[in-house]
Image (cartoon, rainbow over all chains, first blue to last red; front, side, top):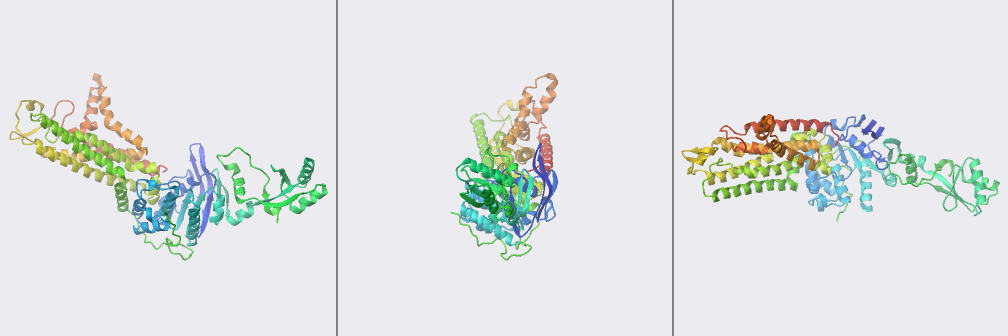
Amino acid sequence: MIEAAGLTKRYGAKTAVYNLSFQVRPGAVTGFLGPNGSGKSTTMRMILGLDAPSEGRATIGGLPYRELPNAPRRVGALLDAKAVHGGRSARQHLLCVAQLSGIPARRVDEVLGVVGLQEVAHRRSKGFSLGMGQRLGIAGALLGDPEVLLFDEPVNGLDPEGIHWVRNLMRRLASEGRTVFVSSHLMSEMALTADHLIVIGRGQLLADMSVKDFIAHNSAGYALVRTPDDPAQGEKLTAALTKAGGHAQAEPDGRLRVSGLELRQISELAHEADVRLWELSPHQASLEEAYMRMTNNAVDYRSTQDRRAGLAPMTEVVR
Amino acid sequence: MISPVETAAPGPSAPQAQFASPVPVETTNLTHALRSEWTKIRTVRSTMWTLGIMLVLVLGINLLMLWAILADGSAYFSDPVLSPGLYGLMLGQLAVITLGVLVITSEYGTGMIRTTFTACPKRTRVLTAKAIVFFGLTFTVTTLACTVTALINWAALSGKTATTDCCEVSGGVTFKEGLTSATGYEWLGATVGVGLYVALLGLLALAVGTLLRHSAGAITAMMGIVLLPLIAAIFMQAPGLYKVQEKLVEYSTPVGLAALYRVRMAGDYDDRINGLPQLATLAVVTALALAGAYAVLAKRDV
């Protein structure tokens, strides 16, 4: 069990993580989601005792990492980028980590097998591809056969086969009763891998719920309505929908994107306004869209085109 | 090609509420860190390169010096018998300094330090292990190299007779029954003494590397420590600064090494020079730098 309580990290004037509190429970994959620069890696470093929190505390099994007895046997971590000296071979790298952690050397060959690096075990890791580097990092995390695992962006640079493999590995580790905490900036990946989601933006907690709840709460529905090409008809319908409490917005292709009203109501309002409908179809915003809407105000680096507004909870509109 | 093995589970595959690893748990101590650091230092090429270059410089320059002395024809009596080893070591020490810096800064440069401190949250233990392994290795290698040069120089230059008057004036060389020789202190200084001095200098480099975390920055700082006192002394010509100038020269690294060989680089020859004050000073400076490194390491974010 990983626990953060009021975790805050400041670098000078910039606050990287602010008042973050959450729990990561065993037996499940917990996704740690946030845009680039939202404080995911900083939080993970604080959990691992590499960075000291400015305020609050991060504990594993009730103790800060640096006070945890046999810490490397209880917690394994894949850190961002390659935290590996490129001059050593994969095997030598794992061996020196194993020796430092008091892990028997035979585990080195076992984990090399688990991640599928046996054949390049004696090659210097400097020449490894991004995907091979990730596998080496994952091998390092598994070395101590720990009950708590932290993975920072484990699928970065992996090919589809590798992504599939990581996904299964996470799920298997969790099914063995371990605590698995995985960071990612990809909602679609987490929707497939995680059971529980912790979403942060600009270092603050945005959501802490199961993936199922997240989908139910955030996946908004809307309707697409096409009227005849006469602009007056469109304006008339927009006025009627707005008056009824809905929200209508023109799409680039001339259709109206309507939220806040059920299909039946839209049809009746159109009938009352004497507007003919050429199309009335239900749609569901993707999880990715819901995530982006949630973190919209919390991204550091954003392209300039505005996002469209008007997504409402799905239960209100389409059944 | 890489083929993922999905079936090889790293632990028991049966689902359970609380996970427990079948791998035996061993409480770690300094021995584990020492073993790990030994693996680290012997598995990177920079160790082989820096120590190899040090050996080539120490032995090669010593042979060149000997060749120059013997080619001169007249016997070489102005400096102690074992002292030709000094000149190669003056350059060789720079290679040891580089290794000392790299032992820690290469971990910061690659991010390996985060893996290391995750595997061993007791950071001071890691630094202690690094210091012991590095000091032990460089002390052994330097002492061995210098013992070899001392033996070569002894074979080439001892047992000669004094043929000119010059030697009485320049002094420095030991005579036994009219023949060139070396005292036990000279042997000690030219082997273990310089081995200690160079290994301490390397340890200082390790401490500076820990404080600065950047290879280039730390190596530059160490070059400053080695060279600046002498350079500064050159420009301190004011009479009021004479004392400072003298001390700067006396305790500069090249003069300290020379003193261990009983070679007086500046000023008049003094029968009592043995390099011990310089060795003790370097030990104190290194201890202070290491204390600073320990203090910073425990608190700083990685």
